[in-house]
Length: 295
Ligand SMILES: [Fe+2]
Image (tube, rainbow, N blue to C red):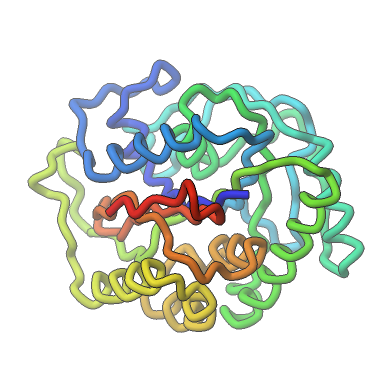
């Protein structure tokens, strides 16, 4: 079981110009895209059955939901950037594994539900992270919604709930006997810039806008490099509040709980600003023989 932190600014898909996206770009955000390309190549060398992704852009207020049909096909349009992301997707789902997770999490006391609506539109976070990690789209997904504990209660409650969900999911994965790649789909600091460039891929306009946010991001990167994931999760409520981070949805906490809070170094693939947000690509490879110190 390998874990990936995979940010989902639709800009990186836009910049890659895949056939599925209607918009055309002249490139951009290479530091992130080249990091993603390298991690995608590593995933090609690993034998696994499914990608299990936790997304902040499928938001549920009553319980945690799982995609529950074998195929979803439609067009995803980014609500903030429809000019750059109109993606025609056709994804397959590992329904057996999703049902197993739903069942085991339910037994542990978490409110859960299977999503069986054939017209349900897949969120752009899932699509962006999965496309960048596996542009061939040749692995089925399990997509998990984010229950809004941070909004409804507090970041501390979110941390507890997401940990419990991660522990339940790993029990379900072990019982299924399947090999999976876990994906936590989000950026780190999340303060947007306020003036959009006329040309989105104009890299002269992309830079860090807020030094305090940058310092927070680098603190987390440093802890990840040194295998201190328990500490990262312990400070998650404070980090989330101070950087208005998408970690508020619980993705990183969920993934780290599922992986037993790694005490080995993360693989760091790249960090770059997109519209002012701090985006880090990282992976946790439990096998020392294949773990790389990338950057
Ligand atoms: Fe997002």
